[in-house]
Image (cartoon, helix red, strand yellow):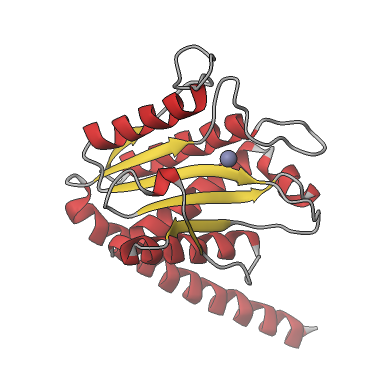
Length: 227
Ligand SMILES: [Zn+2]
């Protein structure tokens, strides 16, 4: 019994040392980013909105557009708190297309590009949720433009951070050819935070606590990229 207690105490001590070391590393990284954070504008794009709900939770019916907005707002909080100039493409549940007449999707995308250009974005992080016919598929995937080396570095950094959160270790960043990745020459990524077709991902993404955790993981990935 005593041995058990000693072992337990030792384990707690080791855990505390590891935690302290990890925290020091994280904060050193954040502090490094703070030094120039105010010079950096990061556009956070909450995907979809309005009549375009994106995909929906298979069980809950929760709209992707609302989950995206919630995570984007948390991410803005973390980035602003660290001194970055964080700009959001949308801050309400509505879309950016004006009226939902013909061509609304392209008007919506062009408006997002306009926000990116007018803010002279140094980085673009677009937040989305995924859906797959295979219900077992879960975890996040971060997409980068196939021609952007900096985009791949940023995507890898955020992917690494998200894998540590959701335990989907095998997930990798992926090259893509999407409009939102081509709005600036600066690094741009699309973060597919989880699969609304997977019951566990959906359950987690329907809680504000997990949305905060996802936003913080993305934030840490951004800070690690700049560090
Ligand atoms: Zn989407």
